[in-house]
Length: 144
Image 1 (cartoon, rainbow, N blue to C red):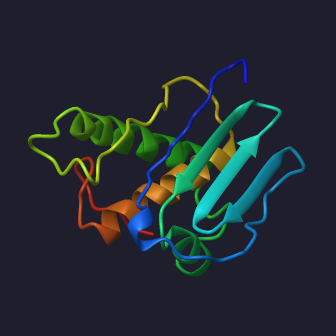
Image 2: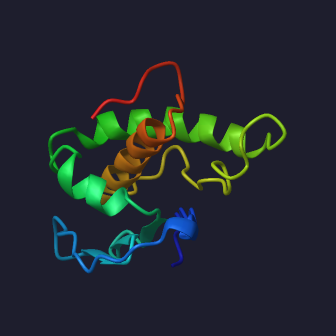
């Protein structure tokens, strides 16, 4: 992928469980697939992808997340920027924040259009993460 790659890879395989469900995508260029609790969203046209490995996220996404197009891409981008900055700051401070929660930095750059689907998945993962692990990224609570 020549333009760049977002890889968000959180591995909590202790609680690994299986589900063979497919997440639908919003266009032909966006591919969504799940295996176990792995969700992969790729936009081949924009050449970015997001991979989320988190037990429970797939079922949460299907049952609790707002449907696609509920939030605008601009809204999700603004939240993602704030939350990713704080998340990455916590990754860099393992003595202060639980390194089992904050394992890897998220490569999310300001000014790059990742497309709706990548922003949708990142936004929902960060909402899920904050609600599940009782964390608050940025100055406001994550709501669905």
